[in-house]
Length: 91
Length: 116
Length: 76
Image 1 (tube, chains in turn blue, orange, cyan):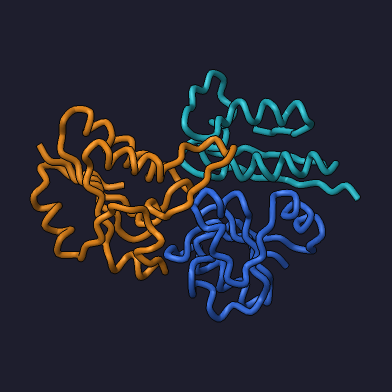
Image 2 (cartoon, chains in turn yellow, purple, red; image 1 turned 90 degrees about the vertical axis):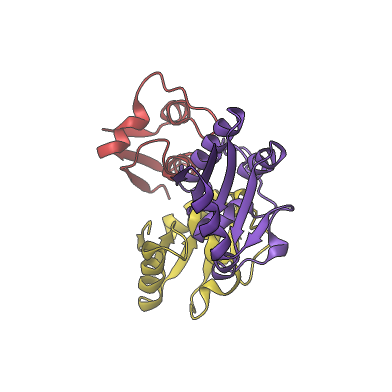
């Protein structure tokens, strides 16, 4: 399962998306303001794989902050969405 | 005439940051003294290295630099910066990192306040 | 194998980044041979108004017109 998160770590939606992903042992994809989860310790305690969309990272000047996050392009996101049994979001 | 423009939202995800910058610019061009106050996620507006590529968006970090060139004071709240996980090295040059008291003083001194 | 993506877009074109996200997912899914449906509901229908004059952010009208030419199916 894949959870898409588009809201920042400061928001209720962002926190909810991460909690659901954590509880369901799902992976997450960060896009839009969700890419701010890539900054410092915002993903502490999350054990799944975190992906982030490169264009949205770059726009915000975050492409240098990777901290265990896998950077993907839109094509890779489409492939992942096509392959996963379930995709939920965007939170 | 003094205007304080407060931004609490990060750039690009919604229109608020672009609107804050746009109205600050408009006010400056009318010879209004403008202070742009960045708190909470608004501090991300000053993150170094923004590259809008071919997204179609205006580069808002560039716009902030333009604002400062036009004489706008840009304040970033220290606590907000820490809460979102950024360091003073991560943000643009010439931004004033201030505490909550300085922000409340700015708002108190301003004739009008706009919140985005 | 070609799959079908169905995107539910409910936000107005110029106050969120959802427009660009919907455009990017649509264009890449279409270019990989998938079918893409876009259902515009509520404020999402404003993305498809004629005569939009947007500057400084992604132009919803122009971008969706291009995608419709490439096979995007839009339902209002």
